[in-house]
Length: 183
Image (cartoon, rainbow, N blue to C red; front, side, top):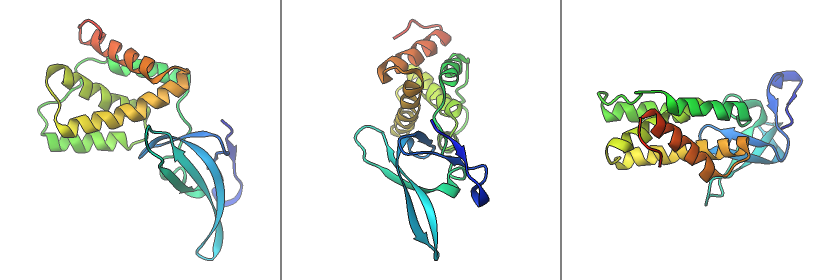
């Protein structure tokens, strides 16, 4: 990924180029498909045009270059970070069941939108562990699906593996931590 540092008011902001993969905390993995100049408030401003690469969607985001860090746009994780995420699935006893579901749900949403792959992995781990013990509610399944879509695709990119392979690795680590035979 090409990352440069801009001069002027955008100093220290990442500058992605067309074709770079990027991660949006609200939408997941995407690709910069264009950098467009638009008139905003009487002046020109550059925007990243990003195509989100989630199955079945054609979501296109437009993010101001100057505001990229503020919205959490970042480069995808690297191989070392992706491998370290397995440790998140091996951490014991993380599900907090004594907390009311509404509070858990808000907490999990905050973690999903944090932009941190480790936090998304914790959400996925907790919900997968809960699923081992009981059937998930509709809201829990939605959170698990969101976490899975965001994390699996990014880790697959970092590792050069298929999404199915990555998901099996996480499930295997989760079962091993729970002392259960793998899937």
